[in-house]
Image (cartoon, rainbow, N blue to C red; front, side, top):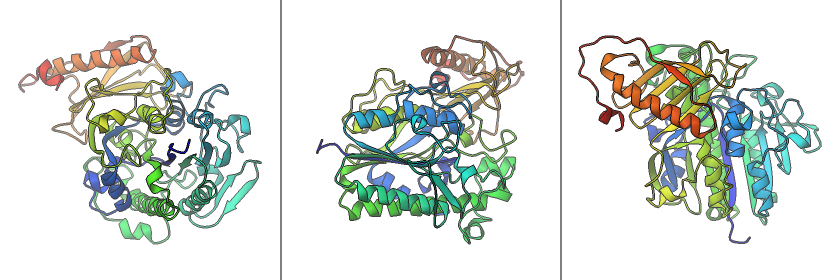
Length: 447
């Protein structure tokens, strides 16, 4: 046990990948994340497998796709018999703790049997309802409301540092789940610390948001301010580990459940498999990851649970549907998948698959999002050439020139659906749009 590292997950909510300076954001929002990713292992192409809060969390806790956890939309609690990361780490002798937003139960406060096996508990099922930016209220192990001082990010970080300090002599697994930079629902706003909105309003706008508008100009300044405070909190957490002489003996994962498209892809902020909602910042530091460089393979949120167990020397359960990325840090990538697969069953029932170059998505228009986990019939919705159009502004679906690409991607999608236990669906091809462009070959579709 003495050789097993501690494990800390720093989990944000609704954070776009391009908030990071490593992805070209010029606003200096994430210097601590960027430095940590350069010291450790930067997962340059990291994607959620379900761009909705609850479903994504069910995948991260169990290592199963949302259609197999049963939590395919918000509001469906995790099954009582579900095996989570907490169970696996506890069985291996770790002390386990959870601080922040849970979103995998159906009541508040969350009773012990619905906490996924975590021993230490300071959390809310739906933190955006139990708290506000400067009114942090969560519930302890005895389901007593605990009001905590400071801006919400800082209050949670204080609690995380106390947990680490109290358990520095134990191997521990700590999951810190922030609400930020998610919107505050009752305000429909992104409330940063005082003064931070003004600092970032009018700054750099990602190309998709600049082109499509949405609520970008109303909300981006506050959103950026929240991201900045999260990064400052991440720096504080790293400092605490360093001061306790734990930083070299702790695996740290920074990631998010999904991104944010600011009402440019549907009527709200996520629930879409576009890059803006699906791609997230992800990096590891610690034993096994230091000096790992930048991983270029496509990595899914479903790959993170087996990675955490593998890094701690715990056997990865066969039922987990992702795979550890540790071999990638050693250059062992011969059998790594060429694509990531995404499901969405809330707001729409859809599926998508993404390679380095292509993104292909389908929709089940006869199915109502939130009532059906899947469908036996889908219609082609979009095809993007990410090499030429990384912000997905030119939909190529139905283009005569790209029919072979669509066929290859359709095959990929059906194969991935079947691999995770879904029935092979009928996919209705989009109406062909004649064009004078050159034909894109199936060889390019596989590039």
